Image 1 (spheres, helix red, strand yellow):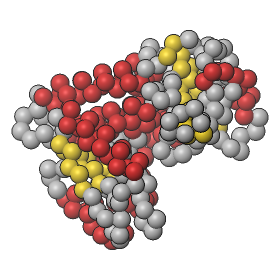
Image 2: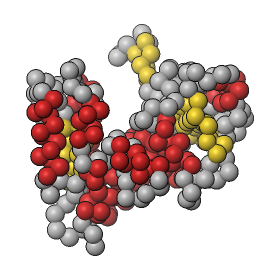
Image 3: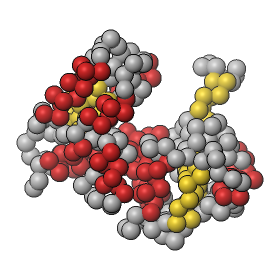
Length: 291
Protein backbone atom coordinates (compact mmCIF):
# COMPACT_ATOMS: atom_id res chain seq x y z
CA UNK A 1 0.00 0.00 0.00
CA UNK A 2 1.27 3.46 -0.97
CA UNK A 3 0.15 6.64 0.75
CA UNK A 4 -0.67 9.47 -1.66
CA UNK A 5 0.96 12.50 -0.01
CA UNK A 6 -1.26 15.51 -0.70
CA UNK A 7 1.01 17.83 1.25
CA UNK A 8 3.99 17.00 -0.97
CA UNK A 9 2.04 17.21 -4.23
CA UNK A 10 0.42 20.51 -3.21
CA UNK A 11 3.88 21.88 -2.33
CA UNK A 12 5.13 20.85 -5.79
CA UNK A 13 2.26 22.71 -7.47
CA UNK A 14 2.83 25.80 -5.34
CA UNK A 15 6.55 25.78 -6.27
CA UNK A 16 5.66 25.47 -9.98
CA UNK A 17 3.20 28.38 -9.72
CA UNK A 18 5.76 30.51 -7.88
CA UNK A 19 8.26 29.99 -10.70
CA UNK A 20 5.59 30.79 -13.32
CA UNK A 21 4.42 33.98 -11.59
CA UNK A 22 8.02 35.17 -11.19
CA UNK A 23 8.24 35.26 -14.99
CA UNK A 24 5.19 37.51 -15.49
CA UNK A 25 5.76 41.09 -16.61
CA UNK A 26 3.69 43.91 -15.15
CA UNK A 27 1.30 43.44 -12.27
CA UNK A 28 0.97 40.20 -10.34
CA UNK A 29 -2.12 37.97 -10.47
CA UNK A 30 -4.73 39.00 -7.90
CA UNK A 31 -7.40 37.05 -6.06
CA UNK A 32 -10.10 38.78 -4.01
CA UNK A 33 -10.98 36.78 -0.90
CA UNK A 34 -14.35 37.79 0.56
CA UNK A 35 -15.18 36.64 4.09
CA UNK A 36 -18.47 37.71 5.67
CA UNK A 37 -18.45 37.69 9.48
CA UNK A 38 -16.08 36.00 11.92
CA UNK A 39 -16.81 32.29 11.65
CA UNK A 40 -13.64 30.70 13.13
CA UNK A 41 -13.27 28.06 10.42
CA UNK A 42 -13.74 30.66 7.69
CA UNK A 43 -11.16 32.93 9.33
CA UNK A 44 -8.66 30.07 9.31
CA UNK A 45 -9.40 29.04 5.70
CA UNK A 46 -9.07 32.58 4.32
CA UNK A 47 -5.85 33.14 6.26
CA UNK A 48 -4.41 29.96 4.72
CA UNK A 49 -5.42 31.08 1.22
CA UNK A 50 -3.92 34.53 1.77
CA UNK A 51 -0.65 33.01 3.03
CA UNK A 52 -0.41 30.60 0.09
CA UNK A 53 -1.11 33.39 -2.41
CA UNK A 54 1.67 35.50 -0.88
CA UNK A 55 4.09 32.57 -1.06
CA UNK A 56 3.44 32.23 -4.79
CA UNK A 57 3.54 35.95 -5.54
CA UNK A 58 -0.21 36.36 -6.02
CA UNK A 59 -1.84 39.42 -4.48
CA UNK A 60 -4.48 38.32 -1.98
CA UNK A 61 -6.97 41.15 -1.56
CA UNK A 62 -8.98 40.53 1.62
CA UNK A 63 -12.47 41.99 1.94
CA UNK A 64 -14.31 41.61 5.25
CA UNK A 65 -17.95 42.69 5.11
CA UNK A 66 -19.66 42.54 8.53
CA UNK A 67 -22.01 39.71 9.46
CA UNK A 68 -24.88 42.21 9.11
CA UNK A 69 -24.21 42.57 5.37
CA UNK A 70 -27.37 42.22 3.27
CA UNK A 71 -27.76 40.15 0.12
CA UNK A 72 -27.90 43.32 -2.00
CA UNK A 73 -24.75 44.73 -0.38
CA UNK A 74 -22.82 41.49 -0.89
CA UNK A 75 -23.91 41.23 -4.52
CA UNK A 76 -22.91 44.88 -5.05
CA UNK A 77 -19.46 44.05 -3.67
CA UNK A 78 -19.15 41.11 -6.07
CA UNK A 79 -20.25 43.38 -8.94
CA UNK A 80 -17.51 45.87 -8.04
CA UNK A 81 -14.89 43.10 -8.07
CA UNK A 82 -16.22 41.82 -11.40
CA UNK A 83 -15.67 45.31 -12.82
CA UNK A 84 -12.17 45.73 -11.34
CA UNK A 85 -9.63 45.00 -14.09
CA UNK A 86 -6.89 44.40 -11.50
CA UNK A 87 -8.77 41.43 -9.97
CA UNK A 88 -8.33 38.09 -11.74
CA UNK A 89 -10.15 35.74 -9.38
CA UNK A 90 -12.92 36.08 -6.80
CA UNK A 91 -13.63 33.71 -3.93
CA UNK A 92 -16.53 34.18 -1.53
CA UNK A 93 -15.81 32.01 1.49
CA UNK A 94 -18.47 29.46 2.35
CA UNK A 95 -20.55 29.10 4.46
CA UNK A 96 -22.19 32.51 4.43
CA UNK A 97 -24.18 33.72 7.45
CA UNK A 98 -27.84 32.73 7.67
CA UNK A 99 -30.10 34.85 5.54
CA UNK A 100 -27.69 35.13 2.63
CA UNK A 101 -28.30 33.18 -0.58
CA UNK A 102 -24.98 31.47 -1.24
CA UNK A 103 -25.94 30.03 -4.64
CA UNK A 104 -27.06 33.45 -5.87
CA UNK A 105 -23.77 35.00 -4.77
CA UNK A 106 -21.75 32.30 -6.55
CA UNK A 107 -23.79 32.85 -9.72
CA UNK A 108 -23.06 36.58 -9.47
CA UNK A 109 -19.32 36.06 -9.84
CA UNK A 110 -18.21 36.68 -13.42
CA UNK A 111 -17.41 33.29 -15.04
CA UNK A 112 -13.94 34.48 -16.11
CA UNK A 113 -13.14 35.29 -12.45
CA UNK A 114 -14.91 32.27 -10.93
CA UNK A 115 -11.76 30.48 -9.72
CA UNK A 116 -13.84 28.29 -7.39
CA UNK A 117 -15.59 26.82 -10.45
CA UNK A 118 -19.15 27.10 -9.11
CA UNK A 119 -20.71 29.41 -11.70
CA UNK A 120 -23.19 27.45 -13.90
CA UNK A 121 -21.34 28.57 -17.03
CA UNK A 122 -18.13 26.97 -15.78
CA UNK A 123 -19.97 23.77 -14.90
CA UNK A 124 -21.32 23.78 -18.46
CA UNK A 125 -17.84 24.35 -19.89
CA UNK A 126 -16.58 21.40 -17.83
CA UNK A 127 -19.29 19.20 -19.34
CA UNK A 128 -18.29 20.40 -22.83
CA UNK A 129 -14.55 19.97 -22.10
CA UNK A 130 -13.95 23.66 -22.81
CA UNK A 131 -10.49 24.43 -21.43
CA UNK A 132 -11.32 28.12 -20.94
CA UNK A 133 -13.55 27.20 -18.00
CA UNK A 134 -12.61 26.58 -14.38
CA UNK A 135 -13.08 23.28 -12.55
CA UNK A 136 -14.02 23.20 -8.87
CA UNK A 137 -10.82 23.07 -6.85
CA UNK A 138 -11.28 19.81 -4.93
CA UNK A 139 -12.13 17.66 -7.99
CA UNK A 140 -9.30 19.29 -9.94
CA UNK A 141 -7.01 18.46 -7.03
CA UNK A 142 -8.16 14.83 -7.11
CA UNK A 143 -7.13 14.58 -10.76
CA UNK A 144 -3.71 16.05 -9.95
CA UNK A 145 -3.25 13.60 -7.07
CA UNK A 146 -4.00 10.68 -9.36
CA UNK A 147 -1.88 11.90 -12.25
CA UNK A 148 1.14 12.76 -10.11
CA UNK A 149 0.86 9.41 -8.33
CA UNK A 150 1.13 7.51 -11.60
CA UNK A 151 -2.54 6.49 -11.82
CA UNK A 152 -3.76 6.47 -15.43
CA UNK A 153 -7.57 6.42 -15.46
CA UNK A 154 -7.86 5.32 -19.09
CA UNK A 155 -10.14 2.28 -19.24
CA UNK A 156 -10.42 2.16 -15.44
CA UNK A 157 -13.72 1.97 -13.58
CA UNK A 158 -13.99 5.04 -11.34
CA UNK A 159 -16.75 4.93 -8.74
CA UNK A 160 -17.65 8.29 -7.22
CA UNK A 161 -19.46 8.05 -3.90
CA UNK A 162 -21.40 11.32 -3.65
CA UNK A 163 -23.21 13.55 -6.15
CA UNK A 164 -22.60 17.11 -4.91
CA UNK A 165 -21.93 19.99 -7.29
CA UNK A 166 -18.79 20.76 -5.30
CA UNK A 167 -17.10 17.35 -5.58
CA UNK A 168 -19.07 14.37 -6.90
CA UNK A 169 -20.48 15.61 -10.21
CA UNK A 170 -17.42 17.59 -11.36
CA UNK A 171 -15.08 14.75 -10.33
CA UNK A 172 -17.10 12.38 -12.51
CA UNK A 173 -17.00 14.80 -15.46
CA UNK A 174 -13.23 15.25 -15.13
CA UNK A 175 -12.60 11.51 -15.05
CA UNK A 176 -14.80 11.08 -18.16
CA UNK A 177 -12.97 13.63 -20.30
CA UNK A 178 -11.38 12.63 -23.61
CA UNK A 179 -7.84 13.55 -22.62
CA UNK A 180 -4.66 12.12 -21.15
CA UNK A 181 -5.11 11.09 -17.53
CA UNK A 182 -8.88 10.64 -17.90
CA UNK A 183 -10.94 8.45 -20.29
CA UNK A 184 -12.41 6.48 -17.38
CA UNK A 185 -15.68 4.59 -17.15
CA UNK A 186 -17.53 6.35 -14.34
CA UNK A 187 -20.31 5.33 -11.96
CA UNK A 188 -21.82 7.81 -9.51
CA UNK A 189 -23.31 6.32 -6.33
CA UNK A 190 -25.32 8.03 -3.62
CA UNK A 191 -27.72 7.48 -0.73
CA UNK A 192 -30.39 5.96 -2.99
CA UNK A 193 -28.08 3.53 -4.78
CA UNK A 194 -29.28 -0.07 -4.46
CA UNK A 195 -26.70 -2.52 -3.07
CA UNK A 196 -24.04 0.14 -2.66
CA UNK A 197 -21.26 -2.29 -1.56
CA UNK A 198 -21.70 -4.28 -4.77
CA UNK A 199 -21.13 -1.08 -6.75
CA UNK A 200 -18.12 0.16 -4.78
CA UNK A 201 -16.46 -3.27 -5.00
CA UNK A 202 -16.29 -2.80 -8.77
CA UNK A 203 -14.13 0.29 -8.46
CA UNK A 204 -10.57 0.38 -9.73
CA UNK A 205 -10.53 3.90 -8.30
CA UNK A 206 -12.92 4.89 -5.52
CA UNK A 207 -13.55 8.58 -4.79
CA UNK A 208 -15.37 8.85 -1.46
CA UNK A 209 -17.14 12.18 -0.94
CA UNK A 210 -20.28 11.32 0.99
CA UNK A 211 -19.66 13.22 4.23
CA UNK A 212 -20.13 10.27 6.59
CA UNK A 213 -17.24 9.35 8.89
CA UNK A 214 -15.52 6.03 8.11
CA UNK A 215 -18.49 4.93 5.99
CA UNK A 216 -16.51 2.86 3.47
CA UNK A 217 -15.49 -0.44 5.11
CA UNK A 218 -13.13 -3.18 3.96
CA UNK A 219 -15.96 -5.31 2.58
CA UNK A 220 -16.90 -2.46 0.21
CA UNK A 221 -13.66 -2.46 -1.81
CA UNK A 222 -11.66 -4.92 -3.87
CA UNK A 223 -7.97 -5.68 -3.44
CA UNK A 224 -5.73 -3.28 -5.33
CA UNK A 225 -8.20 -0.40 -5.40
CA UNK A 226 -6.95 3.21 -5.46
CA UNK A 227 -8.83 5.18 -2.80
CA UNK A 228 -9.27 8.96 -2.79
CA UNK A 229 -10.87 9.97 0.51
CA UNK A 230 -12.39 13.45 0.23
CA UNK A 231 -14.16 13.38 3.59
CA UNK A 232 -13.02 15.32 6.62
CA UNK A 233 -15.14 14.61 9.71
CA UNK A 234 -14.73 15.34 13.39
CA UNK A 235 -15.20 12.32 15.65
CA UNK A 236 -15.22 12.63 19.44
CA UNK A 237 -11.96 11.42 21.01
CA UNK A 238 -11.28 12.09 24.70
CA UNK A 239 -7.59 11.22 24.24
CA UNK A 240 -7.05 14.31 22.07
CA UNK A 241 -6.52 17.79 23.47
CA UNK A 242 -9.13 19.09 21.06
CA UNK A 243 -11.64 16.47 22.16
CA UNK A 244 -11.93 15.14 18.63
CA UNK A 245 -9.94 13.53 15.82
CA UNK A 246 -10.26 13.99 12.08
CA UNK A 247 -11.31 11.03 9.97
CA UNK A 248 -12.29 10.61 6.36
CA UNK A 249 -15.26 8.93 4.72
CA UNK A 250 -13.18 5.74 4.53
CA UNK A 251 -12.31 3.41 7.40
CA UNK A 252 -8.59 3.82 6.87
CA UNK A 253 -7.40 1.02 9.15
CA UNK A 254 -9.71 -1.51 7.51
CA UNK A 255 -9.41 -0.39 3.87
CA UNK A 256 -5.74 0.58 3.57
CA UNK A 257 -4.38 -3.01 3.70
CA UNK A 258 -6.48 -3.79 0.60
CA UNK A 259 -5.62 -0.61 -1.32
CA UNK A 260 -2.74 -0.21 -3.75
CA UNK A 261 -2.79 3.56 -3.10
CA UNK A 262 -4.81 5.65 -0.64
CA UNK A 263 -5.00 9.24 0.57
CA UNK A 264 -4.74 9.86 4.32
CA UNK A 265 -6.99 12.22 6.29
CA UNK A 266 -5.69 14.76 7.00
CA UNK A 267 -2.86 15.32 4.51
CA UNK A 268 -4.46 13.89 1.37
CA UNK A 269 -7.05 15.79 -0.65
CA UNK A 270 -7.28 18.77 1.73
CA UNK A 271 -4.00 20.53 0.87
CA UNK A 272 -4.79 20.24 -2.84
CA UNK A 273 -7.87 22.47 -2.69
CA UNK A 274 -5.92 25.65 -1.88
CA UNK A 275 -3.17 24.75 -4.37
CA UNK A 276 -5.73 24.33 -7.16
CA UNK A 277 -7.45 27.60 -6.21
CA UNK A 278 -4.11 29.31 -6.82
CA UNK A 279 -3.61 27.39 -10.06
CA UNK A 280 -7.03 28.57 -11.25
CA UNK A 281 -6.13 32.16 -10.30
CA UNK A 282 -2.95 32.04 -12.38
CA UNK A 283 -4.97 30.52 -15.25
CA UNK A 284 -7.53 33.36 -14.97
CA UNK A 285 -4.69 35.89 -15.10
CA UNK A 286 -3.25 34.28 -18.23
CA UNK A 287 -6.64 34.08 -19.96
CA UNK A 288 -7.36 37.72 -19.21
CA UNK A 289 -3.87 38.88 -20.25
CA UNK A 290 -3.08 36.92 -23.44
CA UNK A 291 0.58 36.75 -24.43
